[in-house]
Length: 260
Image 1 (cartoon, rainbow, N blue to C red):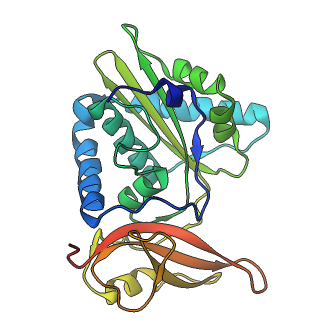
Image 2 (tube, one colour; image 1 turned 30 degrees about the horizontal axis):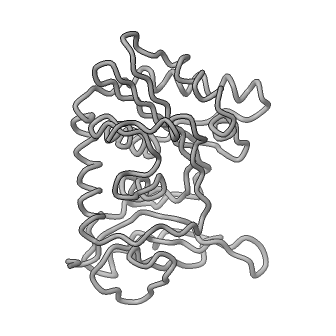
């Protein structure tokens, strides 16, 4: 698959909490999670450029200060998800927010980050040419796109992580931006065998968190409580806002039992 100019030039993707994803099989989730882990190990056949990734943080915060927005802090789990996607782009030679299987930035973060509670926005930059693109060149691509630049400057964001992969004459950069809603004290395993594992992970959460439930990824939005059957689920944490109002936060995605 070749890079899509439509999405190279399109705006960064910011997914709203509650946006429905297409149904995918348990085996597709398991295979994609394995792919992301492999890409973190092999950089998609290229190499990770961590220096440029850190330069993107510096340039981002310079731009945000100029715009009157607070500086962003580096977040390792956001960076890991960004690195995994940049490496997958390099390995399969495509440039999209959605993977060929239909997985989006929130899906990737749920598979890679095992503690973080949040929904990210994502920017992608791509360059092909004999002269490698610098961090300033990559930022220039985002600056020339109104929606990418909006993502980068969004006032509500507080944290970010970047992944940059260079493979031959191609450069892929991914930035994830978010305001984390919280973190689990302990990482949720990717494979969960008992309800006690989940209860132990969320046991130390305190107010304003008021409970948790599981979202069946075969039927996005479907709430599952108690003992779930084999399948793929996302941990959702309910947080009180004020009075009787509450919001439901996105947590890690995990495999329960042995799904067919």
